[in-house]
Length: 198
Image (cartoon, rainbow, N blue to C red):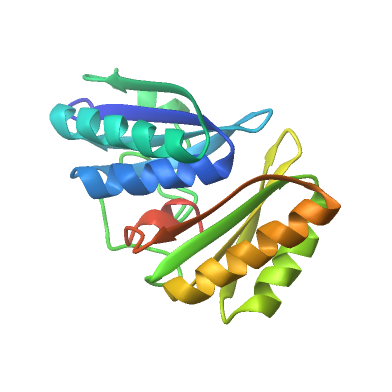
């Protein structure tokens, strides 16, 4: 990793982070190393590539994440110490170490759209997830708990179905619990879901 730069994007909430990571992957030739929970609803994504690409991707990611949530911090390390990869998270998708060579996208395949609802607590999320599944023909990909009572459900499918599902899920979740965020990413980067172990 010594010849590659390291970029970090830290957000409050998984919805903002996923939007930011999608923008990071689309904006420059970078690879997602992984992501991790810092606690209290804060999550951080790690990307690598050449310095200019990482800088461009972190800037794009921070801007995109800031449109849908709160960006806590961004940072680029141009020449990380050789031992730094040992403290970074392993990819949630493949269990590979950060020094592993990029491969083909993992995940359960390309999605035309990805949708997310994020709540504080399980009651709103369970109700919202049920509503998403009933409202449209979407696949419920996974639910992720990040701490601070933040929980998120991710769905995928065609853009219209995902939009309808997220709208229905957000409305239902907000009636019985605290909706933190909802968002649809049309045409997500092919590595996005794999980078989050979905």
